[in-house]
Every structure is written in C-alpha cells, then in structure tokens.
Amino acid sequence: MKDRRKNLLKFAQKIDCDTLVTFEPENLFYMTGFWGEAIGILEKGEKTSIIAPELEVGRAKEESENCEVITADRGTGLIAALIDNVKKKKVCTDCQNYSIMTSLKKSIPTIKSSAETFYNSRIIKDEKELNILKKGSKIIDEMYDICSKKMKIGQTESELQAILMSYAMGEKMFDTGYKSTLNPLIIAGGPNGALPHAQVTDRKFKKGDLVVVDLTLRYKGYVSDATRTFAIGKISPQEKKIYEIVKESQKLGLESVKPNVNCKDIDFACRNYIEEQKYGEYFIHSTGHGIGLEVHELPTVSSKSDMKLKENMAITVEPGIYIPNKFGIRIEDSLIVKEKPIILHKFTKELITI
Image 1 (tube, rainbow, N blue to C red):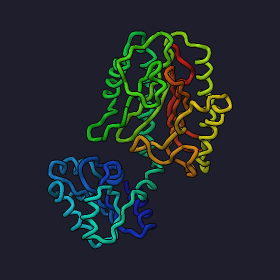
Image 2: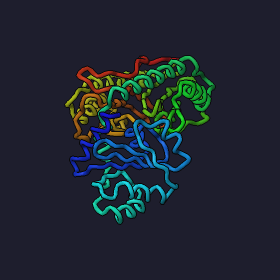
Image 3: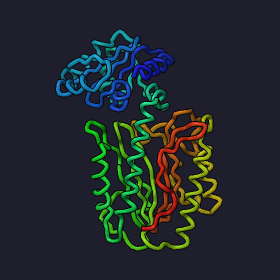
C-alpha cells in the first residue's frame, strides 16, 4: 500500500497537485484497502484519510490500511467534511458528479477533475495484485473443469449458471462489498453464442451446439476473465474449421505480447490471421482489454490503441468469430505482460466435445 500511495502522489505531482480525492469505489479500495460508501483523501507525505458515514465507519477502520477514519453525515455532510480537510490543498479528484464538482469548486476553485492519476498507477500491477489475479484465474479454470463434466443435452443455460455460481460463491469469488461485474457468466449455446455479450437464458442445450462460456469473476476485489467454447455432440466441418482458426488466432496474439509492443499490434496479429482465413467480417470486437479492479480497464487492445505494453500490465487476448443466428466461438485468456508472458489460465484450449 505504501508503494501505491507513493506512485499515486508521483502522478499527482505531474499535474501540479499535492492531494488526491477519490469518490470511486475501485480507486478508494486501491488507495486504502476499503471498498464502500466513503471519500478517500491522500495528501503529500502519504497521510491517508477516509470520510465515511457512521454506518460504514466500523468496516472502514477494520479493512483500511494506516488510514484516519473521519465520521460525517451522509450526503452533504461528507462533502462539508471533505472541504474542511482539503480546502487549502492543490486537489485532484476522480469525482464525476456534476453537482458535487460544482459545490467543490465554490470552496476549492483550483480543484482539478481527472481520473488519470489513478489509472496511470493502477495499470501496472504490484506483486499482491498479481497473486490475487493468479488465484482468481485458477478458480475459473476449476469452473471450466466443472463445465466439461456437468454440461449436457437438455440442460438450460441458466441451470449450468446456477451450478457454476454456487461453486464460485463457495470459493469466495463474490466477497461482500465489491461491486458485481457485468454479466459475470456468459453461457450462450447455439445461436445465442453469436452474441458476444449474450444474456443467460432458459434455452436448452441441443445436440450439435457450440456453447460459449465466458467467466468474468471477482476475487478479493480483482477481476479475472476467460472464455472457452465447448461442443455438445458432433459439430459440422465448418464449425471445426472456425474453431481452429480462432484457436490459432489467439495463439498468435499471445505470442505477440511483450513489453514495449504496441497494443494495436496484438490486435493485428489476431485479426490479420482471421481476415486471411476470410472470416474478418465476423470478428466484431476488439482483441482484448486490461483487467484489474474493473472488468474493462486500460490498456485497450484494439486496432485504434497506440498504447505500449509495460511489464506487469494485466490484459486479455480474446479473438472470436460470430456467425449471425447460428453460432459463435471465442477463446480468451488473462495474462501478465512479461518478456515471456504469464498466461493465467491453464484449462485446455483443445475443443472439448461433451
């Protein structure tokens, strides 16, 4: 936590600020260790404070690291306490609420609104964060093993979801206090798989289905993300061919990940191969994204991204091909950027036929 705070202040100084104020729960957790309804303050010298309503004070004291916890009334009381504490400082905040920013500017005219300081710090993961991501990814691999054993003809997507969610909860993948992820489980059989962000339905799995299973789950605050595609019974030669194309595309993307590589070059490695195989029009999303305290964070791995990778960034590589109204195939891993990347998921990418 000490190194994180030093890093945050270093980025704050670059925009001529000596105090950071966070309203966002992800940034509050990153800076203090507490995730809840509160405002975080980081001052020059690394003094860290949390302003919280009384109902959150107990948990804030218990979960935060080396923080002063200040009690204030909810709503305007929190803002008043914040102003009292920082009105003479050079402040930068991640606040995105127009009315709150208007109120703050009346008392702190020079206050700056930017989340960039937090994103610049969070984009490189420390050892503690990397270990949490590794553990979360291991649990996701175990859930894919469950898929391979429990998925069957006649089962609904929602029934498989219930089995997987039960296991995830038993492994503490939904710790209280952490904001839930969007669509934590995508289970999409047959034509539903052609929708990259399909909702889980009561559709029953049928013989010949391809089933896309995308698991995006949070462990100790941090999101791990992976996708595998399963076959139920015999599938067509075209489907087998497309599966191998996606698998090879993802392999090429993973092989291109190194420090100082441009993100768009990873996208190109995946996309170019799919285009060469004449399926480019069916690859309808970017190749990947950063992971961490949010499901999608920097860097963006897309054809438009000029950001260069740095060691200990955490990203996904997830090409897919989606044939409208028929089927979809996606293969995704989370990984840590190194000279030799650490791929966090070990579950096989060979096509498993149920």
